[in-house]
Length: 171
Image (cartoon, rainbow, N blue to C red):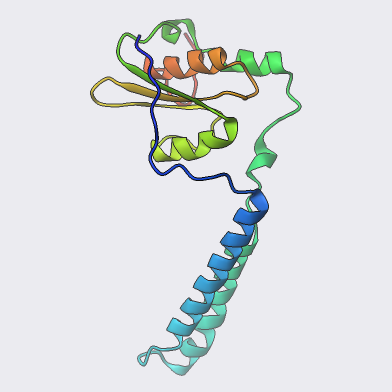
């Protein structure tokens, strides 16, 4: 197994959740105003559509943009660390070294979602892996996650070895 670091182009500086929420709100408000303006500029609409469409469109966009999605609420932070680490353990048939090229990146947990999204992997997991068609397996691991890096590594290498994403433990 060969390990090497990899760099993802265009890494961004960290933004606070409050800044992200404010930027998203301003973007959604601008988009809503533009769409409202554009929806009133069509000559083919009848009177009822030209009156109702902007209000319906505005209501739809405002409710979808203003309500934040609390992703952190779905994570059980009260779970015992030993139990959490045990849940990450792969089945024995997948728990062996990967016999091809592995490219590993260990980063702070806050950076894992953006790197996983760039790899087109699950951005909601604590770590992620991507198996390329040439056999190279890319893994992103948190340096400060809820389990040791080695535990996340075993879990992601098991995915490289064919363990499905739905994590079956039936042998």
